Image 1 (tube, rainbow, N blue to C red):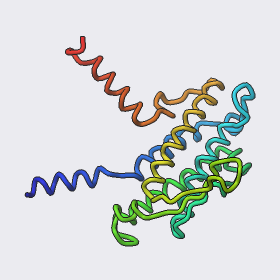
Image 2: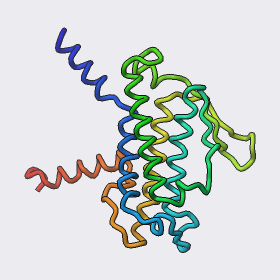
Image 3: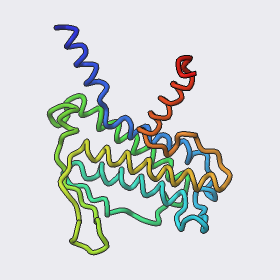
Image 4: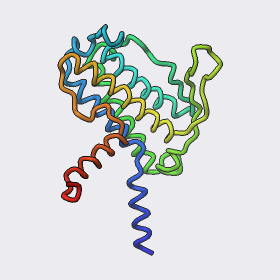
Length: 204
C-alpha cells in the first residue's frame, strides 16, 4: 500500500503546469539580457514588420493579462498594450519578464499550499472565461470557457511559437541563439530520443 501511495505522490509532484511556463520565460529573459536596445528594437523589413521586442512584448502581455484576469475569473487577451517601453527597451522587457516569473511562481506556491481551496489541483482546474477575438469580424468568435491549466498550456505553446520567430530575427542579425530556443517540447523530446538511438551500440 505504501509503495502505491509513494508512486501516486511522485506523479502528483511531477505534474506542474506552471514550471514549463516559468522555464519558457527564463529562456526569453536570458536572450533579452544579451541584447542591446538596437538589436532588440531592430526591424528586418525583408522578413517582418515586427522586431524581437514586438514579439517579446506580445508574449509578456499574454502572461500579464492571464495573471491580471485570474482574480475575477476572466482573461482578456485582446487588452494588450502596444508600442510600450517593454517593446522597445531590452531592460524594460527583462524587468517585466522577471516580475512575471516571480508572479507565476508565487501563484503556484500559493496554490500548492492550498490558497483559495483545493491546493494546486484545485487551482489548475479553476474555470475561466477567455476573451480573444478570433476573426476580423467582431462578434463572430470572441472567446470561450476554459480553465487555468488549459490556459497555461496555451501560454506555453504561444510563447514557444514566438520564440521560434524571435530566433529567426536574432540569427539574421548574426546573433547566437540556443539550439532548442523556439523548439516545441514534443519536438525536443523526439530529437533527444533520436540522438539516444544513434548513440546506442544496438542502433549501429
